[in-house]
Image (cartoon, rainbow, N blue to C red; front, side, top):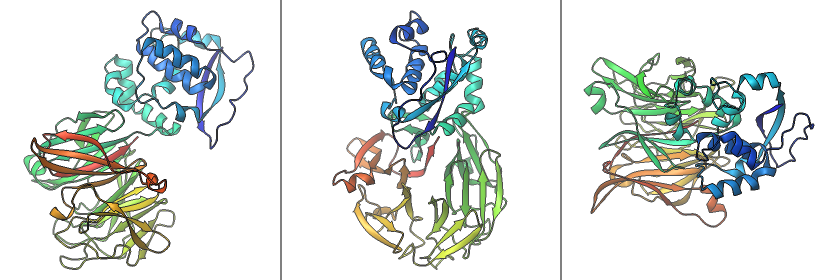
Length: 449
């Protein structure tokens, strides 16, 4: 019998489920070596180690000792998180296991169900290398199956997608500290040099801008590793507020091609690649910001005309499909020369980077008020908030901005975990420094999948 496992989340650590002796296999380090073959640094050993650690905490110590002896590096492996998973056991017949030992399986001697489950735990940074192994791996990566499996298992990696003044689009893996350049966008010169807006939704990066023929949206898809055109909104626009939640995104407000300020909103579904018109907001607004919090979509700030600033916010309930106006949600508003509000949501708590006072503020939901939390690691008032990114990346806040020093212009990624403040510690950390990238952040989006 071969054991095939799938995971489900548990709130607390429980004892592993008891299995009958007929279906349970006791796996040891010696068996691991037999399955991996003579090459102890093979990809199979890397994947099998993930499998064993994820499924049986009782062999964890033995596997760790085995891997330490062979000096094998397992990137992005968090044993603590893996221990929180609880296996549900199902069995496969011996006849099926024999079929899976053919050369057509992903890993010789391993059932494909187990191999796929194991591949889902590998870092997304390795997917491009895996796709180069053979046609079967290439088809697997490009099919999107692993991304869907990761979503079911609750595996999320937050990556930063960035475009700066001297740097084309690049992605940054915070855990691996790895920068990866995206393919060149096949757009015209007008789109390249005009102002753009970006949004990450599902496994797609959407970049909104203008081409010679009008509004355009270019989409980078992780599964194809390439750019393609995305369908236009039902009412194309710019300077809108937007936010994403899993495989959906909402854009609201903005200006149309004639400069009229809009109050309409649309929902984008990345799985089907279509736009759906939503009910209108209570007020038109441009240069606003959007975000999801507590399962609802919000829009704050912006301007209702070229001179009138807005201090109210609006909340969209996706179940009732209605908008609710929240007075004085963004006191002070933002002037026409200022950037849209720099806001980010971490653990369903809203934070903002004040462009005038250079501090981080936290929103008090009960009292509809803002409280100062800490100073920003960079100045935002020097350029009225433009050229600076303020984003949520997992349980951290990211402040990404340019710096001019003796060695030229660099982009610095600062990171801070708000939870550390509750324990009396924590300060801004320099997550990465990107040299020769310029000193101005044009676009930034965080993709979690």
